[in-house]
Image (cartoon, rainbow, N blue to C red; front, side, top):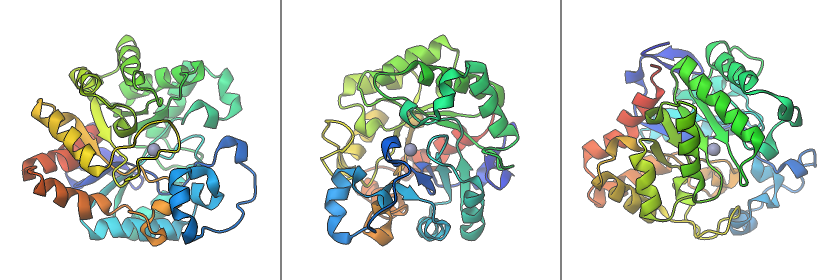
Length: 339
Ligand SMILES: [Zn+2]
C-alpha cells in the first residue's frame, strides 16, 4: 500500500485524488442513541428548515440517510463543480454502508476514501466497553488491509475516532488502538475531539505519549472547538493538521454545545492567520454533512458548496492559487498516501 491511496474501489495513484473534501458523510445514521428504533415519523417539511438547522434532533428523517440515489445525486453535484475526492467518515456507531459507497463511487466517478474505527462513546456498541486496545487496533488494521463491516471494501484512513466530554476510558482505548493502526498501516488518523476547547491539547499529549506520527494526525471540527488564536497556534505548533470542516454552517446557534458557531467568513479569516504564521501545509477543509437538510435538494448548501462558493470567496479575499491548491490538493494527497 505504501505510496498509494486507497479508495472504496481499490488502490490508486495519489496523483488521481485531485481536489478533496477531507470530512464528509454520504450514507449514515446519526440519530441520538436514545431515539434509535423509533419510527421515522413525519417526513421533512420545508417549513421546519430553520428549526431543524438549530436543533438537529427534531426529525429522524433528518438524521438518517441510507438512500443511495440521493447520495449519488449529491456527490455528482460536487463532481460537476470540480471536486474529485470525498473522504467518507461514517464508522462504527453511525451505520456505515461500504457497498453503498462503492455504488456512489461507480455512478459518479468520484474517488471515495472510507474511514474506520468507532465514533463517540454514546454511539458505540455497548459490547465495546469490554474490549482491549489491541482488539480495537486489530479491527482497524483489518478494516484497512482486508475489508470493513463484513465486506471486502477497505478503509483508506483511520477515524473519525470519536471523543466526547468528559472523555471516557472506552474512547481512550479506541484512540490508543487507532494510533497502533496508524503505525501499522501507514495511514493518516483523523479525530473528532470533544466539544471542549482544551480537549484538542489533551489529544496532543495523549498522542505524543502513545507515539503517534503527529504530522499525520488531523484534528477535526476546529470551527466548533477552538475560538482563540493562543489555543489555535499552540495546536499548530504541535505539528498536527487542523481541519475546518463545518463550511456551509452559517448559523450562530449550534445545537450541540453553547458556542457561537462561526460563519464561512470567520473560518476563512482563521485559516488566513494560520497560513500567515507558517502552517500552510497543516490545513484541510470540508463540510461534514451529516444532516439531510444540508443536502441541496432539501435547501441546504450541499457537497458542492466549497467548490462553488468558498474557494471563489477565498480568491476574492486574497488567497493565491498556490494556497488553495495546497489546502484542497497537496495536503489531502500527503495525508491519504500510505507511508
Ligand atoms: Zn464527521
